[in-house]
Length: 116
Length: 114
Image (cartoon, rainbow over all chains, first blue to last red; front, side, top):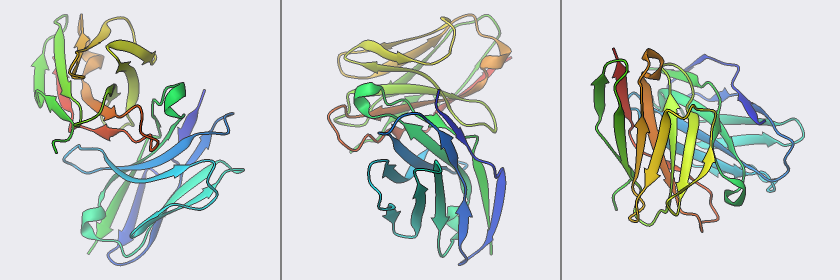
């Protein structure tokens, strides 16, 4: 069974600084997807960034980028120029392609606090 | 373009009762998944519906059942409620033919079982 582990229950970052959130996963599959979702106090789960496992190039979305190490089964999220609005719970998640059933397997989450 | 909508926002029930939660997927989406998120934890997959059939199911008892309607909206039913069923219930939708494989979430229904 696939598992996702987030070893940092809580992280803090100063506004405008950079922070990296860690995630490791376990799977025997070669084709899969990895995601980072953000959940603010409003509860709505918002997609931050997505990575396809067969693509070696790391995904980037504005201030958000990932370091995807397939052999090490590691998928970290880097947030640059942190803003107060980045404060939230961040979840790392894994899924297989749609044709195999794309249920999301989530980690336990990391609370990110941003200090002004 | 409306996103995923869930109702009600908050619900209070007592042990042994039954509850129905509702979800309307994002426009153009045909697949709906349900997740249970206990306080301070990551969401756990309950089941997924496509073409009005349960396509995939997580490790949840038969007390948890669902339905998908021809307009792709979905319901989650929980019978014989237990205190441990208290959680945030999230609905997510996706388009089966999309290559992006992204699930979009609603704001959830907070269920409190007393």
